[in-house]
Image (cartoon, rainbow, N blue to C red; front, top):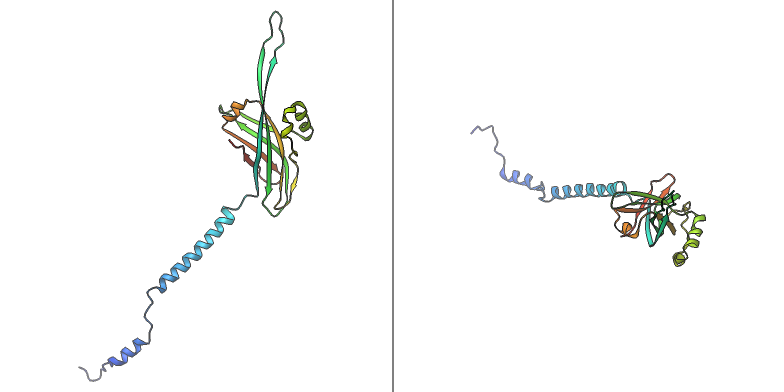
Length: 203
């Protein structure tokens, strides 16, 4: 051995090593878990407030009644021919509709209508009876008196967090059987500066 080389004292080496804390086996794992949890929380918040942001308005059909009207249209008598008659079905749909404002700004309604797609794919659209026609409906059909209630205000302004409710009357050229076999049927509430609100009729 070269006398100029010094052999390190083993006791001194052990002393220096003892001053350094050994790496904790769970330290890095906890750090990774904390970062992952933070990223997950941010993702949930973004998803809820951006992707799953609650709709601006909500609606429901609180009650619905149907009144079938079956009539016969008589044809005129042509020259040398006797006129025939043709059956005609109508269905009055009386729906109590509720609309709620879920925003922090007023919502301005414009109108209310209903759409129907029958089993054969035929599409119908009907605007709810106006305030003047509302009275005429109950005059023409006294049997509907028990269904009468406050008419739906189609041009109401809904304050934030508030709701409006009222009766809307629709008329479709179908029988009750055709209505029950429908592909789809919706109340459509339109707003200024907002998308339409669709409320499905219950089956």
